[in-house]
Image (cartoon, rainbow, N blue to C red):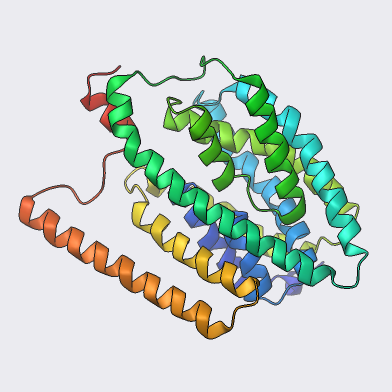
Length: 315
């Protein structure tokens, strides 16, 4: 590979995706894999394998920050990995078997569309859980890295997420975080994010090695993505300290809905209509919120769970 193989448009797409992940903690493969297929015309099989490989390089960057900040629950990481590593290998094996069929690209495209719908539902559920957490955090103290682990559901979660990642590259972020919130509703948000990023590293490394053996990884695509993703994640994480990313999460949900519908075979006009209507609805909500906040002198962004916890007098 030489410098002429680098796709600057793809690097720009990686930058946008990286910023989204850094700002909101969501997106990742749920944004990148559809982008590769729909915008850049990369075959679904190559898109999945290349994204798994790129994520295996990108995730340790974010995980290292949380390791230094001691916001990683290593017990959870260990038990999740016990399920996710064999899960991603099984998922890659299923992926490989599908590659041998005549309609492989269409099958994988459908898989991605279905998992995006599941990821969208997970994001909506996470939004509800986060909104509900304010009251919960006032009633009970948040737990950190010493929180007890529920072994069976944790290993099962890792196995299922690993399976999905091996088949589609999607799920290590949005799906994992949502189910972890269901199992551990009192887990401190910073530890939740740090644990999610760290547990993804061994799973994605195992998945990247397995996918590399299939010969579908496009090195030019991986390098182009990482040129954008690595600085995007870094600057997005820096900006997230001053911006909670709530409105961007809503925009991401609209994008996921439109791309999922398109991947599942809907006409472009239907996907486009969903995107336009969604953006208009979000824009109207933002405008109403700004007017209401201005008139009542309230802050424009909702307080973080940590801020809510502090307001309840928790340490």
